[in-house]
Length: 172
Image 1 (tube, rainbow, N blue to C red):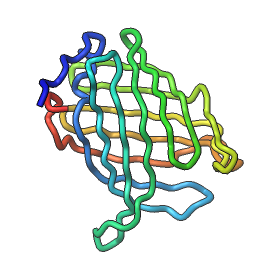
Image 2 (image 1 turned 120 degrees about the vertical axis):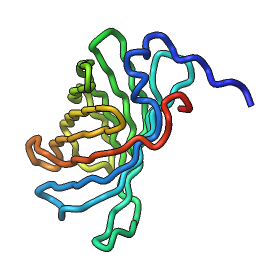
Image 3 (image 1 turned 90 degrees about the horizontal axis):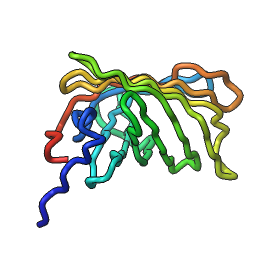
């Protein structure tokens, strides 16, 4: 098997995102019943100036067992200049999104603030008009909150989760 490519220098400041993160979250929105879920997020690279991203969730039942898949998204995270992040994602529900924001690198944590700049919808997708994410990574913990404006509702809290690192960033 070929050696893994070297990390692109533009990604050095965010290399700690690399790897697989798994944990639990909770979702709510005025138009649906609240739910708990288990999520896996993976950041990887191919030596180019972007991170590849994939996310999968499954419903968590009250007894702790997993039920049907809930959501997935895949895409790319770009860091075009210090302190800046651009995210391009695709959802199997017919939604595409472009988000832009900031990256604050601290001694103990990294904070990313993202807001949608464009959302694309297929002809059968539910109406999503705005998305915003706050992500805080400290050590081996990845926490996020996602707000959404959809189906006639104004932007409001939708998801929150805490994920723990499952794989070493050097192996991603």
